[in-house]
Image 1 (cartoon, helix red, strand yellow):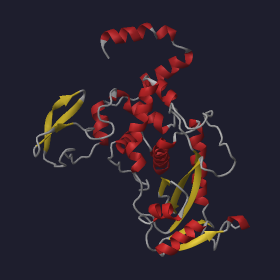
Image 2 (image 1 turned 30 degrees about the vertical axis):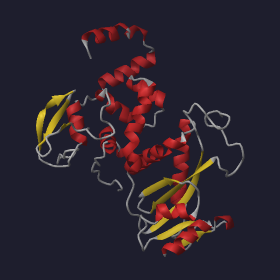
Image 3 (image 1 turned 90 degrees about the vertical axis):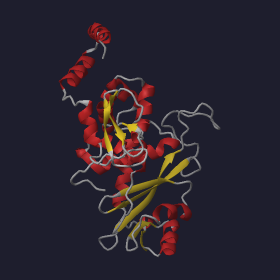
Image 4 (image 1 turned 45 degrees about the vertical axis):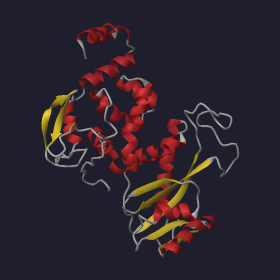
Length: 322
């Protein structure tokens, strides 16, 4: 911060409310992590050129508070966030604080107030930070795998021109029950808590096949409700299938087969999403990835780990599911 900016900030201190004073003291007394240390904690020790992926890279000065490197193969220079969704974002000294706001599930405006940025900046940062976690999904699910669909109300939040009358945030559909206004989301989870999800165009066998076929091990046992789409997929893919007849009051079969884990995940997801008063459908995959990240790391999730996810460099964490 420049000296004149600092003095302008000091001049406004008497105008702070009691709550703002406490928040300021908490931030000032917290542990300070230099930007260089933060970047070092989320970067790959074997540095690769983001342009040609060569490992022959050497130091090449610094710029904007970050060290730069030069590739010996292609001759291009880069820093540790070049080619990532966080490239060209400003105020890097506030990234740690914003990552903590994401971990805490703050709304856009609350995160903006917390970090001292504009709400539009907060919105842009949120979806930059969530770009790669949205695509970070397990490649294989094995053993007993539970699958279930959950539904979210279609939302054009943020659009200026709608094809229907606007409704209040967190509103309800025009018709009760399932309709074209409800967006199906497939949640799939094995007993090791590896979780994946997908926004479906429709709840059909073809859409289910597109998601499940590449990730289910051949010896997996698919558990689902009695919907025909799962039965059809399992028969076509030659996957063992155990339907649970929920309508008949059956919850568990042979003391092993049930869909309680995936249903519990659905419940936690819906409860957590409620704070956002409706999520624009086009951003729904980002929020699903956000929730998966929170579930994966649990209480061990730190800003450094989350920033590692945001730049596509996974952090090793004992006990975390991959």
